[in-house]
Length: 236
Image (cartoon, rainbow, N blue to C red; front, top):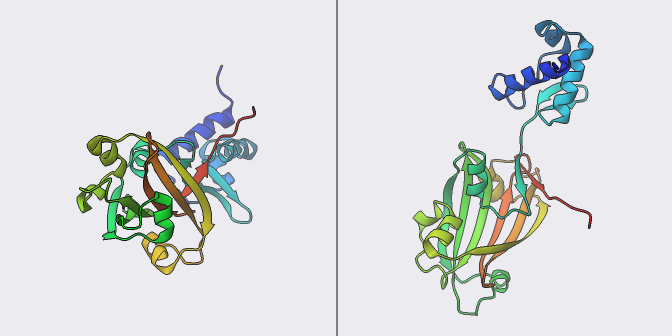
């Protein structure tokens, strides 16, 4: 049995979007124009648009029109993936631009998070994470020197988790995360190419190996217009 006309039109509009004929953030043609293009009534066009709005491909802005919705990257809080792994799932290859790489005595709050002795040092690394040349995340990471004595600039230019699991040979078990909205400092706003008045999402996290050793403390700053955080809740 053939699908209703409005659903066939919705699929054709979806194809236009996926083929790049209608770009994210771009207004779609008017109902009158679409009615002529697809030889259908405005009521049918309206039903097709409603389907695509519900599917998250289009969005209506009151008093302005209907637009191709800009798709945010979805970060599942209950799935422990690195930024590199998340991007590869989307068939994208991220680039890490290292802004700072130093051996330091950590601040007290970092020392407490990592449960380090007073004389222990850490590597501090600030990375700008880019996809298709666009900065998505600014990451500040603290890694104990005792655990990663051979850590280098070139290693951190790649995937941190790949290095830890494949080269160091340690198995990562859990990451404990807290996400809060904040206003960025001027330095962070510049690195993410956002206005200082635009709230961003800050995630503080520490990660552990299967033996319980805390091996990392990080502060990740996400562009709120590019990222969304999701979780799944189930009734007992």
